[in-house]
Image 1 (tube, helix red, strand yellow):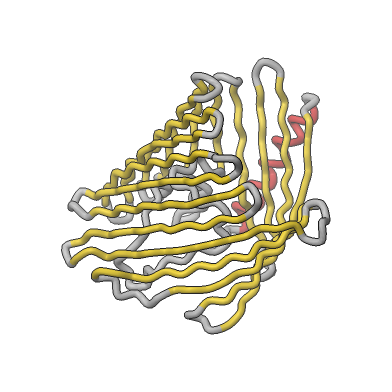
Image 2: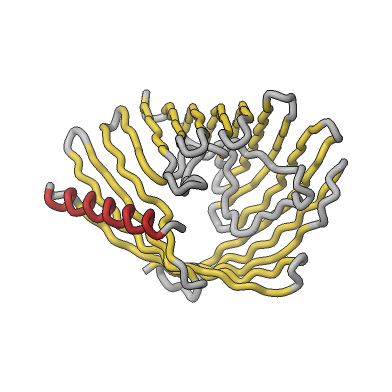
Length: 314
């Protein structure tokens, strides 16, 4: 990551939180450590990764509010990075968020500690209507992407979000409207993406839809996403995932990339289980496994693996 970007985000976040404190805002600092031990069939061995995440959160509110968050990562390989870094202002009716963040998830994959895709052929892919969702870094020339999301809450159950993304560096731009309805056990999200990739002048239009229903702690999630470019190339993805309140998740995701050369298909299965670690508050361990296979004209090698993730919030 560009060091000047890290330093500038640090100064901006520090200034934001200092200003909030001066206004009498409530500031919160928390941290967590996460370590992954992963085995993948292609690498034929075990690797280890991890990071410590430090979060600084501030909010000032009366009838209106200003909020900000900065998340810093110290990684196992010795590098440092920024995860979230945003400012948000508005009211309970409408607000706008600016910076580095993730917008509404139109194809949720809960407990995704390890989800593999057999896409090594360079042609097939799995589209989840999240290309413009967020956490953008810098463009190739070092300029940062502009990312904003405006949200209007029409009621406690229904809200609309409009995201805008642009950088003059490579003339990439797009907008992403999304609607969310959440009432009791039912949650429905639907949205679209319109993207112009400046590096290739290629345009894409995508749609995503997900529906989830919680049945006594067992929540099936059905998702579908499709995208098409100006030349007629098309990608479709379907997902059926069952998440539970007791820590287990299983899922199946099917992707199909339709090109002139044929249909590049990808079938992925994953499962994960999270349980408390030694009954220590904030400590958990997750066991995850995934397998993926190509079909049709997809000649990618099969992918499979397992992961043990340890997380401790302190």
